[in-house]
Image 1 (cartoon, helix red, strand yellow):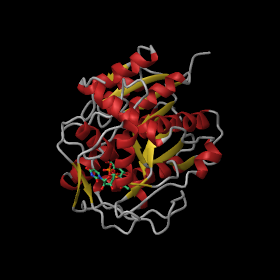
Image 2 (tube, rainbow, N blue to C red):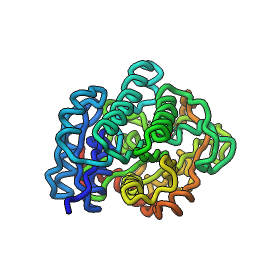
Image 3 (spheres, helix red, strand yellow):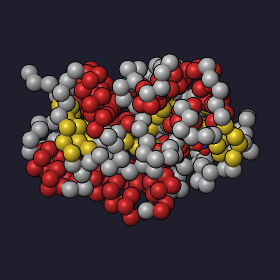
Length: 344
Ligand code: UD1
C-alpha cells in the first residue's frame, strides 16, 4: 500500500519545516508548497538533509487557485493538507490590513475549494492563542471564549477558524482541526532547521539569540510594570518540535477517523506560564552566557499573560509537550550559532 501523502503549505517556514520532518519520520509522504515570501529554500534543504528524503517542493502562492489546482492537486495524491501558509507579523498587519486579509483568507478558501473539487478530506489549520485576546481567566481551555482580535493578523486567525468550521459543517466529506499554538520557540536538535526571521526579529527568542550572537546590541524587555509576579508578560513557550509532533498526531486522528466531531480545536501549549524576565534568565543559565538587556516601554497591543490548559490535547490526541525549556533554549542558541558560523 502506498504511504499516506500530506500537503504542507508554508512548509519552508519555521513551524512548517519542523512539521515536515516529523511527518516524514512518522512514515508519511510529504509535498511542500511555499511561495518563499517570508521563508527560505534552505529550510527545505534542511528537511531533506535531516530525513534523507528528497521531499518534493513546489514554489507556489496559495492565493493562485488555478496554479494550485494544476501544479499540486492534479499532480499529487495527498488526501490531507496542513495549511501553514500565511502572513504572521502582528505589527505589520496593522500597517497592511488588506494584504493580511487577502493573503490569509484567500489561501485558506482556495485550499478548501480545491479539496472539495478534487475529493480530498482532511485539513489542519494553524491557529493561534491570539484568538483568546486578553483572557479573563488562566489557563485557557478551548472553551474559553474567543475575544475580538487586537490586530488584523489576529483577526485573520479568528476568521479562518470560522471559515473552516462553517465549511466542514456545510460540506459533508471534509474534516478539520484547528490547532491553537501558544509561543513556539527553539529549533530542531540537529540545528539544521530553525527560525530564520528576515530583518529585525519581532519575536522574543530570535531577538535574544541575535543579541547573544552580537547582531543586536541589546534586548528590550517590553515592560516590567504589568500585574504579574515580576512585572513582565507571561506566555506559554512551546518547543517547535513538540508543536510539530502535535500536527502528526492530529492528522493521524483525522486519517484514522478517530475524531469525535468533524471540526475540532486543540490548544497546543505546555501548560506553564513563563515571564519574559524568567525566559531571559533561563536562556542565560542554559547556555552559560550573559545577555545584554534593558527594560523598555510596553509594546502596544501586548496582552498581559496567557498560558494553555493543554488537557484536551493530552487526553484526546495523546500528545504531551516533552522537551524541557532549558533544552529548547539550548537548541535555539545552537541554531543561531550554526546559522552565523559562530564556533563553540
Ligand atoms: C504574538 C501572538 C501569537 C502570534 C505571534 C506572531 C498573542 C498572545 N500571541 O505572540 O499568536 O503567533 O505574536 O508573531 O497575541 N518581547 C520583548 N522584547 C522583544 C520581543 C518580545 O520583551 O524584543 C516580549 C513581548 O512583549 C511578549 C513576549 O516577549 O511579552 C513574547 O513576544 P513575541 O515573541 O513577539 O510573541 P507574542 O507577542 O506573545
